[in-house]
Length: 236
Image 1 (cartoon, helix red, strand yellow):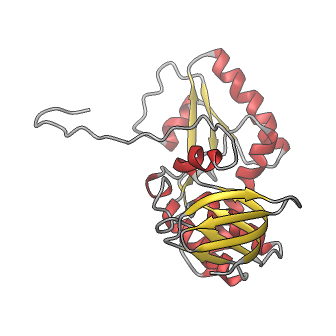
Image 2 (spheres, rainbow, N blue to C red):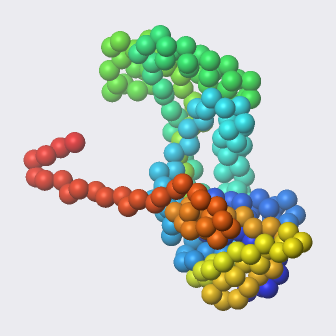
Image 3 (spheres, helix red, strand yellow):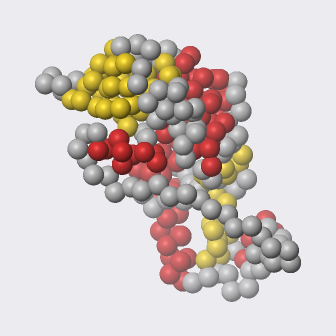
């Protein structure tokens, strides 16, 4: 493991590896990612991976639009399947207030170039025959919506990052972060220290712990998902 880097990214989930990839792609090849176990072993491996383009924010909408295009580009660049499937999305409105919200959103979407289709109840039924459209005023549809496999995406990003010169170190634990007088950082790990200009924390479930290393109280608490076993004869 190197002892100096321009940037140290902490956390090997999809956010951390995506950050590493984009830094390296922009030419910051002297970057390194540290992961305490294996890539995606935190919250990424069980993330839903939904990709809804619906967003009332102009800025976030641009990010979503970029993502749809980028996932195709990443597959071509790395030769790896990201698990991206475009299966569309239909959002139905039963009330005038909801319909007004959708029309407001449609204006934002069209401004930033996101494809959104307005649908009548008959259009919905033709697209999705199993749905009950009684009382439905209308709907909006994103033909480009879909879902992605977060673990597959992360592995593709990792290959792309390495191809651009970035380094990924697994099974290494960050133990402390210390800012120096010149605003640089010393990242201490159980395998040695790394001096760097910038630290990017992408630690997900461990964000609170990482924040404490630099005196930040981050109000994030990880919780454990539980699934109750289904009894015979019980549905739902």
